[in-house]
Image 1: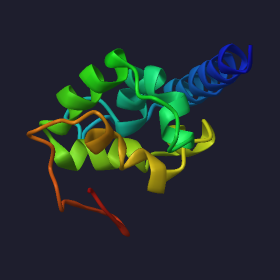
Image 2: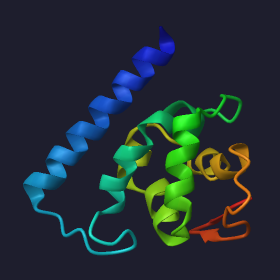
Image 3: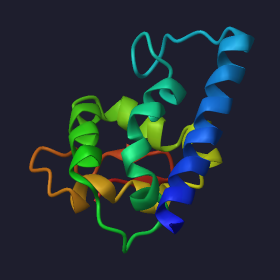
Image 4: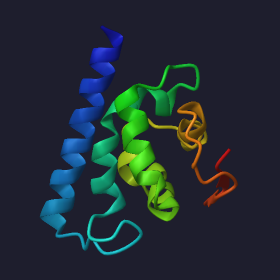
Length: 119
């Protein structure tokens, strides 16, 4: 039940934030191309629990999304440090461990994400 409630809370936060972004007319050019990091963060809903609890298992769907985003480390970092991620309860220190926890061979090890370094 807690996982479902956490996921629903996360989804509501993200949807609310996206609506605010749409109303504000945010420009999407940047680290993630045409989509803003906050929009890209929507794809990481399967990672909500893993991004806030380092002991939580990381789902296959989360790892698939992280693998796609990891092809552009600059975008991956921007998403992990985005307002959407923070407002959903994600802990950046925990979130940056997800690529390693997914055992992604081609993850950007050592890449600097703001004050954090990808393990």
